[in-house]
Length: 504
RNA sequence: GGGCUUGUAGCUUAGUUCGGUAGAGCGACGGACUCUUAAUCCGUAGGUCAAGGGUUCAAAUCCCUUCAGGCCCGCCA
Image (cartoon, rainbow, N blue to C red; front, side, top):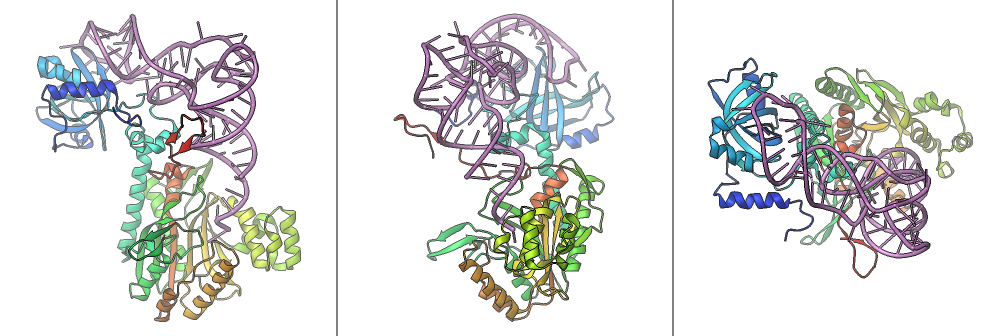
């Protein structure tokens, strides 16, 4: 008995048995093939008469149209599709019947034949011989509608990828986007490094971590929430341009723009400041959009977003003024609290200074309305423990965040490199943690020591890759751009004794 | 955590308003067919209607609980 969770089809199992008994090898070891795209290119000008040259390719059979003495089938590989034409009179009785008896929709096969164009103009491979490379024991979804059920598409992404071309396209785009990032940074003399994912302390962002335990070291370890503190150690070490395409892990809620593990590229450039990083970010993202989309535009959520630089740039205070009409610069703290309360912004009661009100107003009323690319600058010092103090404005830092379609897409600073200031900021964070703030940062004294050896002035930025892919591919859910998004367990056990079903 | 919403055959779904033995297309299986392309034509099989409980003479349909999904809000600075 097979496990009921396995999709094996009884009829297909029986046919596999039949093939075994007929001595047909079902899982050969290798196969030399030409990509379907290459065949299409080479024979683009072919007419109705079959080519003299024979070609060999392989892929998955996606459709079979059986006409009795001839069979048409569609073969798909990762470069495209081509039609197969199988005739009894050219294969011979025995080989032909082996095809029509054993080859089914979903099977992986290799074929050799001559290329021609059918009467209706379809480029087709006139098959002279075929090889079964891997029979499918599970049936594919319906040929026309494909797999639409969102939950099944995520849980069985391999089936989604087989039958839904849009889905394949999204992940091709994702792969190209990441390689564009790497190529561009590499060309500018950045080096990519791999820093620890398992960390004894978690830092570089405000977030709750995943916790694990190393039994040999007998200590708690954390999955990183950001690579920041390690990449900056590399700058201390003398690497002046570093980056990492990093998977980060945050133990927080899941929604259409948050997955517990997500991808980011973090970039650090010595002797640069926040404004250099803004230019780098504008250049990198607009180049990516132009390369992948052909122009600077992305259709997203009913809006047309233009990535042509330079992007709108506002201080957080200016943004609040522009979007709410509240001019914080001319107000006292009690007035601010009044306004916040009137506008229904939560959390204002506990605010101890005008900067906290500013953040509340910004997050509550402005963030979600920043549709076109907008750079927000001048963040309160309390919210930015790793950013340098603003060179002019007291109480604020040299930090920017990029918002697009109401989502935070990038976050960068003039990096704090004064070890004594860093120590003081960590101590402030530690106090907040003691006060119950689960997301306040944990002091990393070794990092402070690293700064003690001297870190050059440095600009840094982190760009959210998943969200960038969402924008470029027009997808409003992060699960559509993550191959295997986090899902709840689906195995439910229903006990016979009538107790509640439970998840195992 | 709150609100709304979805779950019917392998897949895509009708039926739920207003309770009366579950209907289709594709796929599968058997048959016909030598240029089709969601091939076409004839026939057959396949569903404890997400799970559990309740109301009722009778439940896919009404009620409750649970599980999983989706959307929105809160949370995530």
